[in-house]
Length: 394
Image (tube, rainbow, N blue to C red; front, side, top):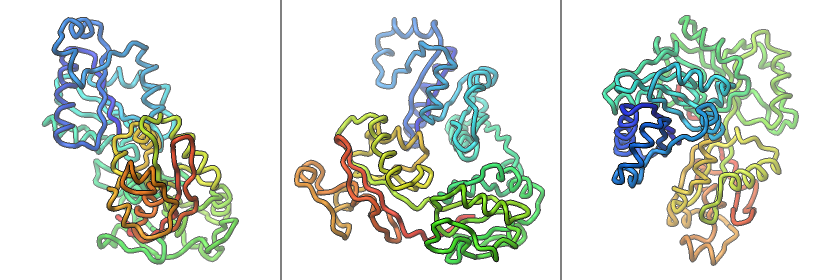
């Protein structure tokens, strides 16, 4: 994930430099970009040759703050304002749209005493980032989401933790409200579910049941399963016909549950150096469209470790909140199967096929290619469907 840190004063600017160093020492998983919006700092920086030569030199924001924020939202970057909450609120107001896709936004006062997540605390990860930043700065995290304050179970956190796609986000509020009231949450999980920890029977009523029949093209739920009055249903497989499925369930349930489906697909990718995020996006979305798949059904984006810093891939993963995983050439070479090999690719990477091998390697419990290697002007894409064994983290 990219953390875009912006400051407005000299104190804030210096804190952003300090924070940049601390994050890099603690957690290399974040891509950090520093910005500032101050003519005074700009003039001082230009005069200071040593400071202006820094590798992590913050970038001066020439455009209006609102335009800068729109760009960050478009790229799904996390935004960290070092300054007043009012500045942050006014600048993000027109961009706030969907709690499942809004960028995480955090505010830190310029003295570094308080860290306050103000948007996308759960799904976007603002609360998690805020706690990390507060620890690094020895600051006080100000978490205001109700489920966190009351140490209550939250449905959206549950979905994120288990790589589940939320099909009807309007039900999150209802389920979380019930959790806050201390009422028992009824979960319907797939038959083969294994829970990673023993669940609290005072909090959860868990039933194991496969709601969707296998290979039902219309994805209609069985009438007999509609009487359970569940709060949350985790489907036993993903659905390509979400609207049909939701309409069917809404007709049969008195109280419509929150519906979650597994992210069963993995995209393997290989590419020439410096392919742009737009080129990466075009190739991936074309492959998904040709297989009637949504980007929301993707669990992982995978490649060889030579591509771990490929900016176009990283940016696409950030924008779509997909975890990007890489493997060594030795790991990819050890994958069993018949793949379309290239001697040129093997000479460059140590393995004859990156995208197909990587997508199968990421299938922990096995899987199969549903789209073999497809070439898009220096980009190769393959899609695997993994055997989904639901190991649910409550």
